[in-house]
Amino acid sequence: MDKVWFITGCSTGFGRELSNLLLAQGYKVVVTARKLTDIQDIAEKYKENALALSLDVTKPTDIETAVTNAFKHFGRIDVLVNNAGIGYFGAIEESEDEEIRKMFEINFFGLANMTKTVLPIMRKQRSGHILNIASIAGLVGYPAVGYYNATKFAVDGFSESLSKETAPLGIKVTVISPSGFRTDWAGRSANTSKVVIEDYAATAGANKDSIRGYSGSQPGDPLRAAQAMIKVVESENPPYRLLLGQGALRSARAKLDLLKKDFDTWEETTIWADNPKN
Image 1 (tube, one colour):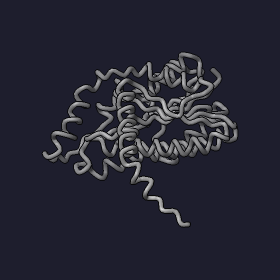
Image 2 (cartoon, rainbow, N blue to C red):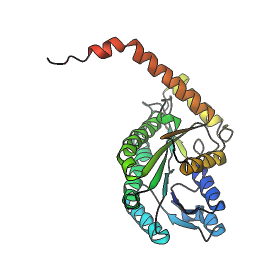
Image 3 (tube, rainbow, N blue to C red):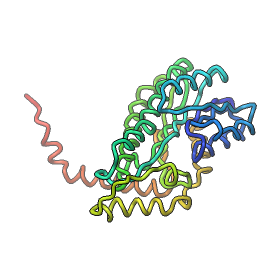
Image 4 (tube, rainbow, N blue to C red):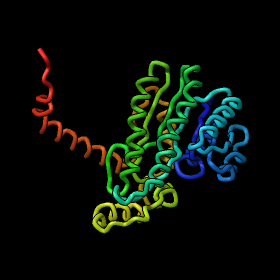
């Protein structure tokens, strides 16, 4: 229980569940949120092992200050959980540029900047584990969340490259890919485009309504997700990717089947495209 965890986005959802569970088990945790008041109760309950810090991951100065203060307080950072994120609903053509860029700043650039700021500490330690909370939407595209998909696909590609760069340095990387969980992601944490185009009602519109409709009653249990993340970190051989939820598993396997079908069907053309010079 001597590991120091640094978690972003702890006001609700996975971040809050994971912080509480870790602290209850005796770990040291840097609990962060944009508003300190949202996490003050956690810090008060676990005064000895919790450090509550204000952090907006879209602000580089916030990131630098939070990481510096965390290191000063605990002397190390063993696990970084990049959990902060938001959603956004709208067909590609309906989606508003300001909302898209806001989501990228949080979901991708905030995660990337957090990682870059913590890496020097982990490199010096020659140890560490980075958990990047992505989504099954980082593997499979869905109507109504195309730009959200794009942020999570970006996290996936970033994380895969990162894992290959840091493995020789003793730093592990795991992408967490959940399906539907009872967090606030599909509730107040996700805005909806003000633009509505009727031609997309049967695709993007229908999926948006479906996701919104089951918000709060998804099969995924955030507490079990938190337990799974701890299990990954404590494992001697953690996976690069952890799917969470039966929906994630079904969707990932369907994607694998689709990829195999396309690869096999078009194999001749794929190979033909090479024309080596003699």
